[in-house]
Image (cartoon, rainbow, N blue to C red; front, side, top):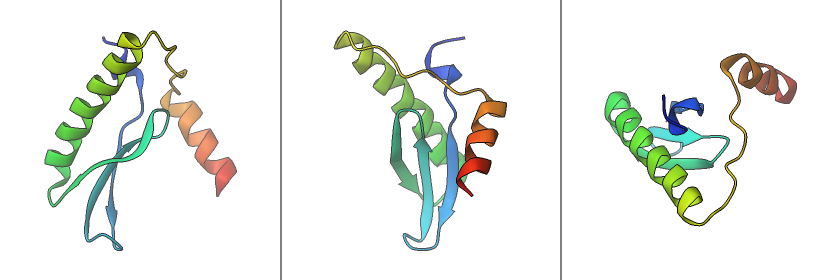
Length: 79
């Protein structure tokens, strides 16, 4: 398991944009987009890997990843 594997990755349809949007809430929002959800997820995984690498290259501390349960609890508080 890599550091990037620990982060929540979300692919959702955007009616506004007319495509799927991929994001990683702990690191960024709207990181990639496309017409096929699986392709967007694959690209999202690459973007998360690259983002984690940039944090490390810059000597910055990574934000703490949320587990699936923690993420669901956070989303319930927002809604």
